[in-house]
Image (tube, rainbow, N blue to C red; front, top):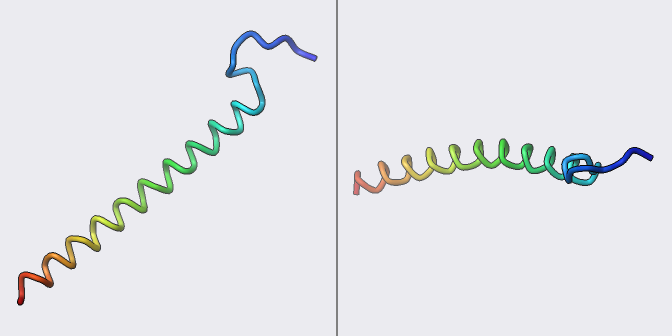
Length: 48
């Protein structure tokens, strides 16, 4: 078994870091989509 010198050496850390990066990328797209929807709603309200 290899010696663990840093927390980055742990498999659980590596897997959780990869997952966190994927969630971050997904959330960026989600936030952008919601921003666009919000702008569309605001534009529609201006017509009233």
